[in-house]
Image (cartoon, rainbow, N blue to C red; front, side):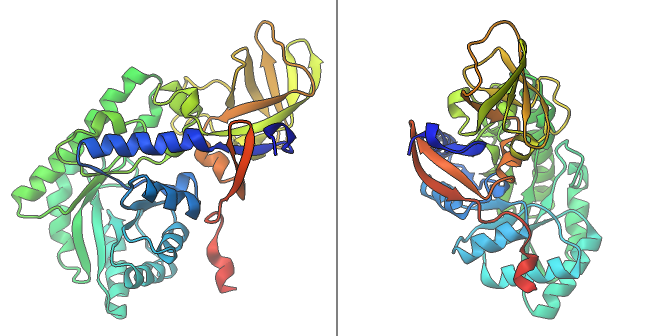
Length: 371
């Protein structure tokens, strides 16, 4: 089947571009003796998680417990959950993951949550591995580096929690508007990790795991002497946000929305059949002013996807264009993670041919399993 025969709108995955990205990041990590544990909330696909392992990834970071459970069921060994848990239901799931997967790790930054997790672990007779979240500048989760020893000392009272090290996420890098901005976020990341790691080591703590990362900071932080495990997520697909900081080029943007031009109401306006339900409304997690519109139209720099309804998008023409009604266009989404979460499968393509469907099988909420 040719790409031109695909019903639109559709979410396509260029398999060659994606495999290039997987190799590029793992090769770079290998040069420095580092590990890649990618954040899989980007793709939410068991197939792609297995492919990441084939390219050299040695573990995974998960954004939901559904993802962690799916990877555990698939036989993956090193699985880290990115966020703390606090409710009885979630703690019970974490306990079961710890039973089934010896390499399962959670992240903690709150003594109240730690106490609840420890109580659940004690009741079940299990030990749960954890890392302390270090705030490297995002100011979302995390202990400030200068408080790391104090927090670790406090955690000693929880006998069913096993300290493994520290983790961070320099997610504030998504406020960067150009490539040169990224350096300061890398400095935040490695500086926070170094301050926490040095203090913990001086206090007698062994750090088996020091993990951090994001796709934009990967290249500036990969040689850091402390960080051993990196967590890029978006790198598998890339998107317009990565284009805006030159973290990727168009031939490294593996996901795009295939749309058809369906109307030409005025000289400077076309309408396509892909809207917010395909592209999302993301224009940068932290108000990135370098993002224009809601995606990048491949091969058409004169077009801006400037407005989205649920099912259609408005394309503004700046100057002249050869676009006409009936044409198909490819739109690189602003944020590929959001677009990925809007579909149940990607249409994998190579060249002009459809290769196979890649199922997004870890999307949604697993409550249905218990009803």
